[in-house]
Length: 130
Length: 173
Image 1 (cartoon, rainbow over the protein chains, first blue to last red):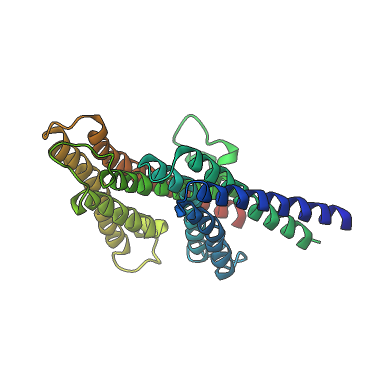
Image 2 (image 1 turned 120 degrees about the horizontal axis):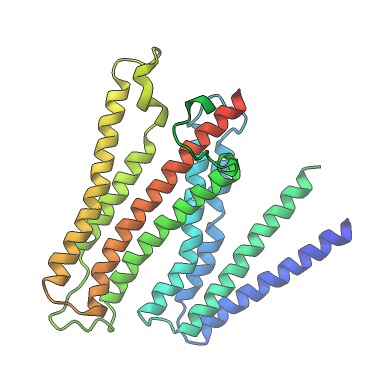
């Protein structure tokens, strides 16, 4: 149990480092530091979900709307930010502000970073269930 | 509940699960984001050196106006409490709540449709009449595409919210 958790943490941090490496490489190779915004986007992406999840009380089913609307708003914002992380390098590459290889690297790096955040949250929740 | 069914095909089971509902909400956010970034892409493209239109055509505030109206309509439509729409048939509702809900909902749909119409108007008046060719014409097409995506996102959000109502209804029984 302990070793499995440790292995997970080590591999997740490794993936996170590779993601950051790809994003920073996509900036530094071409001297254009705008793709760093992808990292900020993906770090911000799970925040609305967490904040709105705290605001809502999942127990009251009788009063539809109200609490659930806040949860839905959080999910809407999260979906917005996730697509923003992919769309931002594409927009930059389409106007040739960054090159296409930089776009590919920053998208892959962003997906790796976001995947790390999400899977870390999932492992954390699984441990809390017991 | 099966007695009140109107259509021949019954709704598949998975549509009532809470997972499908949250997937719908995430998808609505993703579609809205796609709409916003398509128009942003057109705007960035128009101010980049790649925009080689001879009488220069740029994206201005006029081009953003349809998307603003569409987003406003989407906000209005999805802020309405759906259960109030049929509130007149129940006795507990106050005087004319359903009327107010319908009027506001009508305003929302009008704003959404107006945004779509405005997108087509901008495409025709600013680009097609001026005789723009493809890389420039893209800016007008992006406008229509963005408004269509906002409409689609609004539909997805509406459907998944209605799904949620039936889901909690099943639970409370």
